[in-house]
Image 1 (cartoon, rainbow, N blue to C red):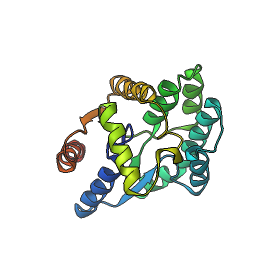
Image 2: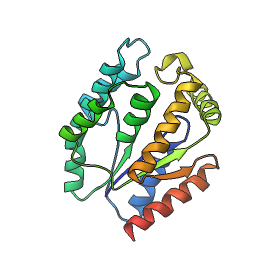
Image 3: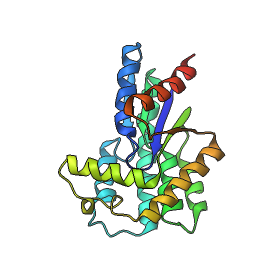
Length: 206
């Protein structure tokens, strides 16, 4: 089983993925917890470029780097699935569509479609998108950065405008409609969100 959890910043998806991994392990599953970008050694190097505020790269370069990370990541996912593991992924193609195509207003979305068609063969059995109003998302992201002693200026994406994140959120909603992703309200407390995720996953496993 291949499960991805996605959403705009501040939705708590990384926390929820860790909780889901613990839940599945306790249920007897062998779990591979991974992420995009950065789920492989090559991906870690790519991630450092993508998230560095000093990386002055064009939208095209940014898109291609995310695609390169995903192409490399496919081998890890294939190996994990082949070994009978449940793959839990923090972000996947849905993020690239939402952030790069919608958020950046990328002018040639067909480029992503072509690259994906020729490099990606393994897609999630389910994508769960955690949704928040942008104002709440920004507030939570700021609180998280403050808790770890960081500032908004330290990340390329955290420093984007509210309008950017509104476009990203709209991108996730359009993705969900087109690809039948599950959208869950992430505005509740952590336990409520996790219970909603657990119900979705329990349904997959019967």
